[in-house]
Image (tube, rainbow, N blue to C red):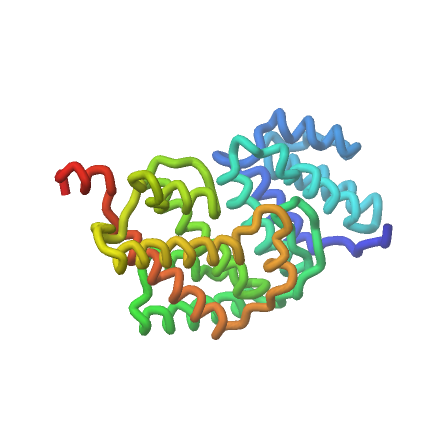
Length: 276
């Protein structure tokens, strides 16, 4: 393996603060376990979790004169199969780590791999992107549920992350409205399909061919969004798509339209029973 230069100590400190965050970070027991399994000595000079991590990783990086084992530790801790029961924590932590790692020219993918990424020099670069994107979207009267994803930490590398996270919010809104637990195309089918059954959600009364076509078209739109940005197997779009600001604006506008539609859907069963 090629030798990777040592991480900036500021970056290392931020990584340790993210992983060892007081309330939601790794537990003390987990820190002990993972350091031992990665053959990194736990100096135990501090009781504070993030400081314990920093002391151990700083010592290892200094001894190695490179960051290979530190990066390997991050990959080990962030292995997706380790966090199947706390997916939200995994995604939030990965986002925070990627903000820091982008200053080092790396990105932690959803599969838990580290890959090279465009190196960001200053937070101002990301903040400027976020402010510009937010202003333009406000001018477009974009749905407020979409604006939440125009954050600087999502834009340190490129616009893909803001778009990717915004599309995930669509699935979450459908799950909240239906109490379903699936995702992607399966979720869309379960929520909106009306063939031979009453759907969970309806855009309209579904009593005419035109109404049914609208419902069917909306299902295909949702499947297209999920198929492009929520491919949970290959994640090919994330690797190959270089989304610029104009792309992000257009896609987020579509996501905004979907949110507005979802805000107006009705529970089809209640509609048919005359409760709506």
